[in-house]
Structures are given as structure tokens and as C-alpha cells.
Length: 371
Ligand code: AMP
Image (tube, rainbow, N blue to C red; front, top):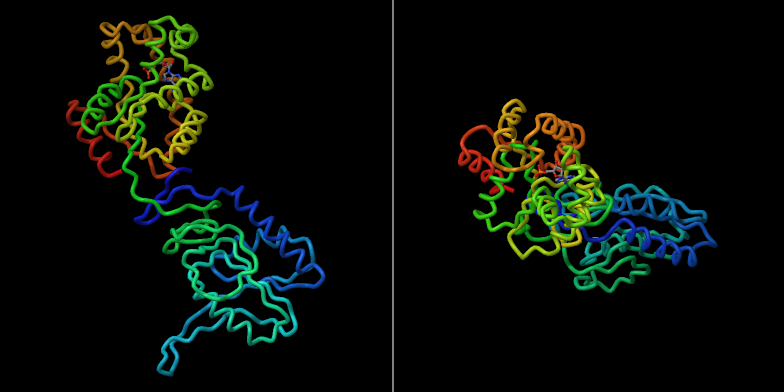
């Protein structure tokens, strides 16, 4: 899902679950060809390899044993200081075929230590399989028998690998990246909270682009395009325009935007399907949503505001209280659930929308500056 933040660092999507599964399949195929006539012991190196080992052995269709070890260091009494020891290996490995399963090999320092320890155990043969391999930094003479995916020397997390303790539970791999300079935001809230007004101010202040799906629909309606005629039949009743139509239109608009420091989405997404489509669109561009900034105003104030706006805006959906109420109904039944969607990603920010325009801009800016 685009860019994520773990502790103080940012990571971008790098290797998908599908690619990982494919690499594991091909590793298993090669190991099976070499080991199927005996019962090898697969030994995973903890902690990072737990996911890889689980998926690897699930794919391996012949007899095998599975064990895990951890390389622990303790203070020795001699002058060399730290002594490394393998914890967890109880099996007698004499005469056995041992395949070490590593999640990632970079310099090879840890592997070298493990390799030396295993060599003393009089095994029949010792093989090494790794899911990820960094050829640019590997400095040892050790033979790596099976390599899943070779990657450049950049820090990765996910699929068992951590950054300072977290990230192991991610099901795909993310690569470290710089803090995103592009800040895309969603300006959110029920009709009449002042999204358009604030979007215009923020747009100028931060050099952002502004996409208002309502404005785009109204422009099509004015020009009586095919899309405009279709949208009018929904908008006039205060209903949402169907997702497929809206998503298609949004993609066209976003792909034509000039470059800027980010995009303010105003009135989009309004449904979960739209939110997912937006994530996909931004991911293709290597970007993400920085935050959903919701302007909060009590509904009672909003109805009066919209009817007042209707006197000058010319918008048919601002002039009839029933249409306005239906727009609120659409918001509270279809759109408000998006709060949960963005809350789950720690991207939801509520901002008090009652007060002077400049006060509300200040509240929104404080959130924006810290995204
Ligand atoms: P707005 O100007 O954002 O209040 O939008 C006016 C009307 O346009 C809405 O009541 C909907 O009928 C339609 N509309 C705008 N954005 C969307 C969207 N993302 N999905 C579906 N309908 C939309």
C-alpha cells in the first residue's frame, strides 16, 4: 500500500506477495531436485526467516525435518569478548543433509559464523538457501547454493524482516525511501463544511493542485457532455454518481494535472471502492495519501449554510431542503465509513470547522505541516 512509516523512516512497496511466492516456488523446485531422495533438515535462522521457512516447507512435497536456530552472543571470559553460540539445535546432525534457510544474506558475517558451527557437526552436506541476497555487499567465499531474489544494497522490511523490532508482520517487502515531498490530502466532511473555500486557500499556500469531483461534474453539466447529462440525473436528486463513472473521470483528471507539491482531493473518495481505486492510482505513481483532513461542523449549522449558498450559487442541489437532506444521508451512509478506512492507517485527522475561515485554515495547516 504505497508508502508506509515505521518509527522515523519511510518505506515504499517493493516486492509483492506474488513475486515472493514465485521465488519460493522456484527455490523449492531446485532444492527438491537435489534433496528428494533423502530426508533433509531445513534449518531456519531466527527471527527473520520464520515466514520464509513456513512458506518454503508448505511448498516442499517430500519428507523433511524442520528446525530453527538463533545466533546468540554472550560475554566470554577470554579477551576476545563476545562469543557466538547457536541456540536451539538439539538434533544429531551427523551424516545428515542440512539446508540452512535464510531470509536475507547481505555481508555474510552472520552466515559465516553459522556455517563454521555447522561444519563442526560432521554433517553429510551443508547447503545454503536464501530468499533475498545482496550481491553488492556480500564479502565471503561461502557457497550460496540457492538464491531467491537478488536485490541492491538498500534496507528492506516485511515478510519476517524488521526495522528496529517492527514490520515483520507485513506480508510483502518494503524498501527504505526518503520522506515523501509530495503531500496528497483528502479534504473531507459533509456538504457545506467549507471544503471548497479551504481547498482554494491551501492550494495557493502550499502550491498544490485541487481536484473537486463536484466541480468537474458541474463543468460537464454546463457543457452538456455525455458525462454531464449522466451525472445530472444523479446530482439533481442529491444522489452519488456511480463509482465506475466517477473513478474513470477522476483518473483522467489526475493524469492531466501539472506537477505540484501534491493534490487536494475534495469530494473524492466518497465510497470505499473509490478509496481503493485512489490508493491504486497513487501507488502507480509511487505516491500515497498523506492524510484525510475532516472539517467537522454540526449538521444543524450546515443546512442553513447550504440554503444560504443556494441563493447565489445557482446549484439546484443547494436550493431544496429535501435534496440537501438526501446529500447528508448519502454522506452518513456511504461516505463516513471512510473515516475507519483512513483511521486504520493512522491517516485520519478531525479539524473543528466552526469559526472564522482563517482560524480553520490555521487548524488545517497545523495538521498539514506535520504530515
Ligand atoms: P460536491 O460539490 O462535492 O458537493 O458534489 C456535488 C454532487 O456531485 C454530489 O452530491 C454527488 O452527486 C456528485 N459527486 C461529487 N463527487 C462525487 C464522488 N466522489 N462520487 C459520487 N458522486 C460524486
